[in-house]
Amino acid sequence: MSILSSRSLLFPFVLLLSLLVGGCVGTETQRSTGEFIDDATITTKVNAKLADDPSTSVLRINVDTYRGNVQLSGFVESRDEKARAEELTREVEGVRDVANNLEVKPKGE
Image (tube, rainbow, N blue to C red):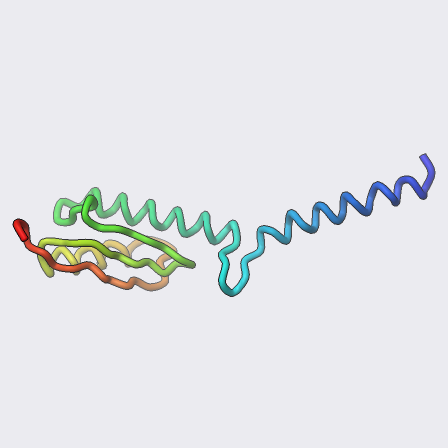
């Protein structure tokens, strides 16, 4: 194989590789693949902690994570449950901040 044909095959390969790697990089408004996976892991861990704790109702609490910032939304039955959900969330590794938007709505309302 001549040098010319080796170089002509190398350029498309390098171009394709750079496009693939560049697609994994985050921007100011879009998460990288790694950040997306980290956020999914945090969300899963928070949901597991909420499910394991008898004083919180994971079925009524929504957890969303973006770049390590966790937002809790949904309904809880008391202020204590709201505070406990935030406390458990802050214990999860990788959580940078918690926006606790849970609303207190006692049973029957």
